[in-house]
Image 1 (cartoon, chains in turn red, purple):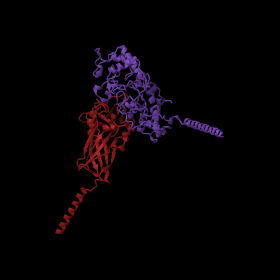
Image 2 (spheres, each protein chain N blue to C red):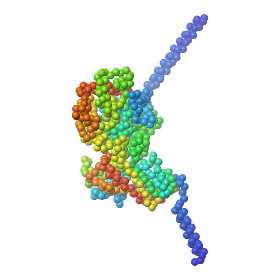
Image 3 (cartoon, chains in turn green, yellow):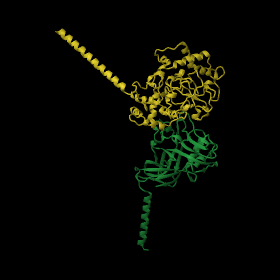
Image 4 (spheres, rainbow over the protein chains, first blue to last red):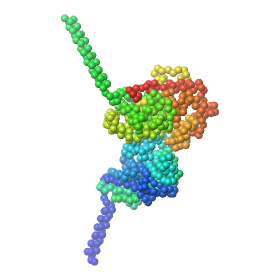
Length: 271
Length: 365
C-alpha cells in the first residue's frame, strides 16, 4: 500500500467522521416549530390491555378483567437536552385517553420549538385551578356536558373532575344487587375549594433515558408510553378488589392515586 | 277683520292639534296592535336589570362575565320552567322551586323528583344566589353556573344527561332563536345554557320585605313585638344568621338528632371528620313560607324550630360551639316561650310579597 492509498483511506475516514458528526449534531433553527406525538399504550403487566376479554391477576392474587379505563392527561411540559423547557399552552393542554376509543391513544402537541427533547412531565388528572373555573373555561374534554353514562368524568354534586376511572369485574368482588361482581374506581379530588380535602392531583416526570425525541420543522417524533394498569393495583399499598370493590370520593382513593402515578413509563421513541 | 283673522287662525290651530292628536292616537294603536302580535316568548321585559339592594353587600357572582340582559333572562326563565330539562319531560326546575314558596317545594320535607323518587334533602330557596359562594346544603358546588348540572343529572331529580338537554334544545322550534336573541348566534353550548339559567336565578332577588323597608327607612314600621323579636334575634341568632342575607354562609352542626346517618352533610365534601353532620346555615329571608324546615324538612312550623333550639339540641362531637353553652346547663339557645314567639313575629317581617308574586319571575305571564 502506498502513501496515496493511506491518504485516501484517511481522507474517507475523516470525511465520514465529519459526516457522522454533522448528522449527530444535526443543525436546526430553534425558532422552527414542529409537532410531537405521545402515544399511550395501556397494558397490564406483560400483556396488552384487552377490554372485557383479558383476564389478569393483581398482587393480592385476585383475577380481574377491565371493562372501562380512561384518564385525563394535562399540563404537559417538555424539556430539551440543553435544558430548554416548553410548556404546552394551558388551554390546549387537556387530553382524555380512553381505552375503548383508539383515536384517543395518541395525542399531538403542536407548535413545539425544534430541539432534542429528553424529558417530559404531565399531570394525571386536571389541575386545581381549572377545577374551580366557570363553564366558559371548560371546553373540549373539560366540557361538563362532554361525557355521559359510564364515560362521565365530572362530579356534579361535589364539583370536580374524575382523574382516572377504571371499572371491571373480578370473581373476588362481592356480588352486587344486579348479581354482578364489579369493581369501580373513580379517582378524583383536587384539594377542595373553600375547605381542604383529599388532593389526588399527581404529576409524573419521565426521563427519556438515552433516547431523544427530535422535534424539527418537518419531523414529528413519537414518544411511546406504556401505561401499566397493574401498577394501579400493585404499589406502596396493594389494592384488594375484595376489600375495596368501590372507591369513589373517599380517603382510600389516595392509595390508588399514589399507585397509579407509577403506571407511566417511556417505552421507546420513534424519530 | 283682524278679529276674524285671529279667530280663523285659532280655529286652524285647533284643527292642527286635533289632527296631530288623532295621528298620534292612530300610531299608538297600530304600535300596540303590532306589539300584541309579537309572540309572548320573544318579548323580553325591559325592566330586567341586576341592581344591588341598598342594604346588601356587593355580590359574590362576577356579573361582568355574565351580564344579565332582558333576552338572557327571558331565555333563562323559559329554561327554568321547561320540563325538557328532565329525562321524560315531567320535571322542570320550577317543579321543586315554586315561586309562591320562595322557590322551594311547598310542603315537601325532602324533594319529590322524577318517577316519584325522593331526593336526599329539602329543597333550598332560589333567592339572592348572587350573594352565595357555595351551593347546596353541603356546599359541594362553588359556582352558580355549575349548580344546575347536579339536579339535571341526579337520578332522583331530573335524571337527564346534559348533552341530551343541549341536543333537545338545538332541535327545538324556538330555542335556537332565543339563544340568538340572548347570545348573538344560535349556538347552544354548555356555557350559554348554564349562563342563561344563572341569569334567571340571579334576578331572583328578595330584598323588599317589611324588614328591608324598615331598615332602609322606606316608611315601614315594626310592631313592638316584632321589634322585641329583632332585638332578641340580634342577640341570640345573628351570630350564625348574620348580616342582611341572614347567613354567615358557614357550615354548622346545629344539634339535630341524626336522621339519615348516610347524610353526613359537609363531611361528604371535605371528608373531614370535624365536618360530620354540618350543614350550611340557610338565609332566613322568606322563612315563613319555606316550610318545612332543616336539611331534611323535619320541622313543619317555625314554632317547632324555635322550640327545638330552646329544648331539643343534642350534644355531639361536632355540635357548634355557640350552641354548647346554654345558661340552663343544656345545649341550645335559652329562650322563653314568649321570646320564641317574638322572634317568630320578627322572622315573618322577612317575607317579601313582591318577590313571591313578581310577574317577571313567574312561569306564566
